[in-house]
Length: 491
Image: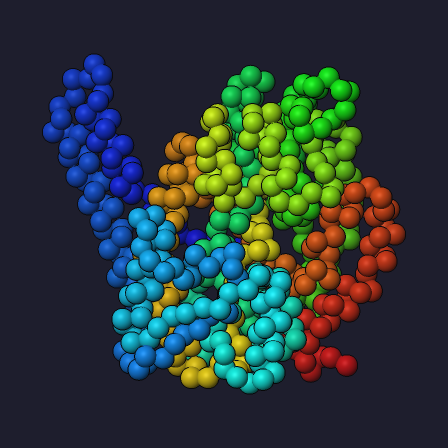
């Protein structure tokens, strides 16, 4: 799990709001001095919090790298999170620019990148490793492709590098707890890859439709622990309306839930706490996919998607092709990712809320979620020379991201531009506290069970038959992953 301390909420936006309320409160006789004192106290608390973050040492040495270029092989879709050319006035862009400038000046080094479409990155890295040309010092790309390359033996073990301390707050909990075995980790996830937040799965709901259909306060429902699959199905019942009168459910109608049947559907496995494969300390692994809980999940999800009569989904659709109904106010709930709050839904005309995926049942204590596979993780190619430069640069960039970029991204952009109210802001913390990126996800390589949920939910295959057909190749795949960490068990 990612257990993060992300409560850096008291930003300038909050302070301005407080000042505005103090100055514009109609009919109030409260002394201005009291409000000013409150604002001053809040300013001081905010200052102390940010100063405390800045004071956390990265424990890195002083060094002069004599103008060396630190070259990143990166995903073109995430370029703006690790390399920007100039300041533009946009908050995150300028924070990234300043972060890079600070690190470059600190170590007399330049930062550059070669970018490729996500599907081509690891091919270029592998060619570079085979040629032993030291073309790249770091890889920043799609975690699934990176997991595939790691199994091929092209990655450096992070624990063989100096100055890398996964106990520092800019590293994800999953790097140490889920991706490390026998003091080996070939993939690291940290704040340098901002996409690990914006690609986190969540749900949005239309507040006006919620009132129209007499829904309870959704935030109270989540906080009470009562937001479950059964409760969602109960609230969805009776919402669907055939607006165009053609007698068929389609995108032009009003729907209770809008979702795709691929990545958003996969995320329900994590939301329901379903384990897929767990590597054990002795190198064995538990392929725990097919069990009574999976049977129950598939039956209930199939009923939800295809038999309930109030869900719009398309088994063939990826991405945002199914979202116009929600954008145009014809969807009560929609599965999605945080990035849609600051992008796709930024200018919708109605108020929306942000909530986690429902729990499997009330006995489940925590709301769980996962970040999408397009999250950018980090790795070091085997041919990278001068490990002191590589380790120092990446640790410095990660630390500087946590200190100066993350407060801007998380608080200003996501919380205050994406979320429409204070309760939604609290929900973001709740969702992120239950986020996971584990071994079975990152090393799935599209060959495990993680991405087969869509096929199972299509209804065109019998679950026991399908799992039996897939079991042998899936087991073979995880044996390759096992051999990466435990080669002595292979053969």
